[in-house]
Length: 383
Image (tube, rainbow, N blue to C red; front, side, top):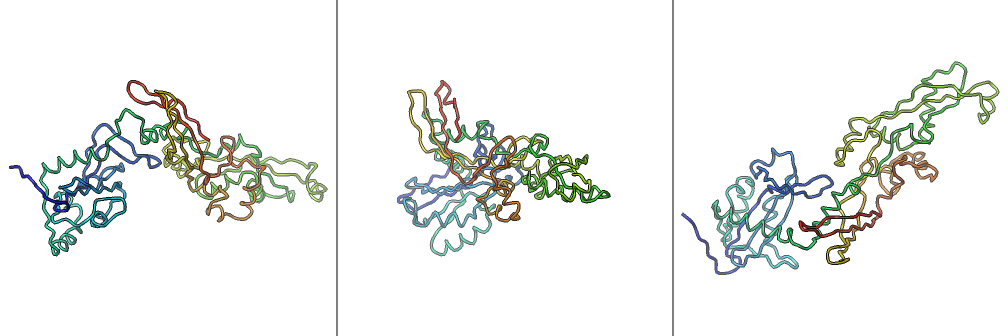
């Protein structure tokens, strides 16, 4: 038997829905991703899913069709009573407001949010009636919510949402700012220390050699302190006596210890790559990835070509923050290390990238061309 609902004025009945998306998830760098194949997930089962799904909270006025929506993810579930309170309150630039005479709630929503029962009891005391929604109504409301949330996604015109997704997925946009740990490819790769006596032991000299290496490659020393790499000082050689040594050591016929330095990633270092959504590079460490771009303008170049202008920022990880002189993490470093990093003659980011100011807003341009099956990005330039 079907039930038909008729309302005669606004706020006579509100329809409530909380739904876990079967198509949209949060991917790397907090980019929303669409999966065409429907995922078997619901309020009852999402906690078993390894993916972070979008969650829609929708409150709709049955008479006017006005609605209030909040979107979150399964890792940031909103207390239902908080959502309802915001929905009922007066809001700037939003017509939806007011407490209804009746509130229609799906049974599964009541079951997932037990604290709502206390709020419903309080609402009943002021004359609000709560109804359990039928499965037929839920299915119809799900269709309505899909139309509300995603109208325009398949439009023939190029939307900002489409450009953000295309730019974020581009191979060169996903590249991380890195520092090389391939010590053999870096300048000043050896750790050295003056010999203090003829019978000095290797383990005594390596302590001073490490201090020497810190002045040459401080980013690797910091990475070791954070647990991302292991530094090894191997194959010691004795050099000298040579010109340039302290005079007293030279006169004694002493030389200089030279250690071959090698760095290797730890599991924590590999996890940095995985957290960035990138394949592990055993010869480097990621420092930062680009955040989702902010589109500042879309310009028609011709009938089938559009120029998209955007800005973006770098999002540094803990190691990247430590190497950025503008960050709080940098200020926590020892003074001698901070002075070394600030010295221009050192390329602290190895051979694969240059010093990055992570606080700077950067600009980029992308060109899109329209084909029979939609828009495709042709070129991407990053500033």
